Length: 200
Image (cartoon, rainbow, N blue to C red; front, side, top):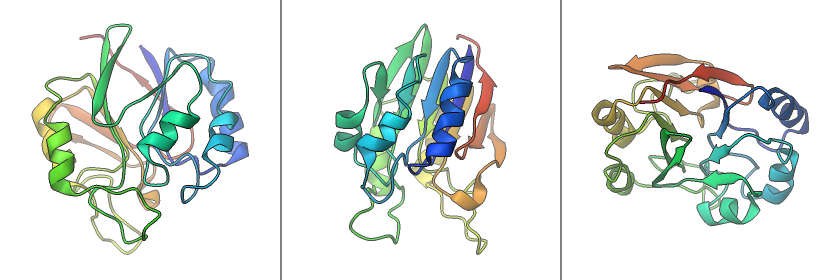
């Protein structure tokens, strides 16, 4: 299955136009959170993506809540947060928010490691894991050289071993990738990223 994935749109019209145009060649489109800025302008940001016609699966970032994203999503968009879905035989599981909690203040939608672990433990198998936050130790380094990823997400990838795991959140690590066992992990950023994932 040909998959296009991105993260951290942050209400950019220019980037949204490029994503919509590229999505015409995809069998599945993934959005790994942070569609707006600081909980503001989410409906308008999702309207910028309304031209995406393949199945579109998204998770909330720390810039929008699960409820806000569910309300703003267009028809044909599946919102995951501690839940999974099946897209033409492909098993997808998603978890959003900033994990562990960010220093950004009350507007940020964050989650503690133990709460994230509880939700991730409901996933027994997946071909693709969509998370907003990266795992601890990979694709999670800030401009000051600090690793700020999630231990719960790292443990879940090690346990589930999906074919592909995608994240965003840490802008300084956009475009970085690596492996956890047999799982390829990519910190996406707001450009089209392309993957081919086989049905299990």
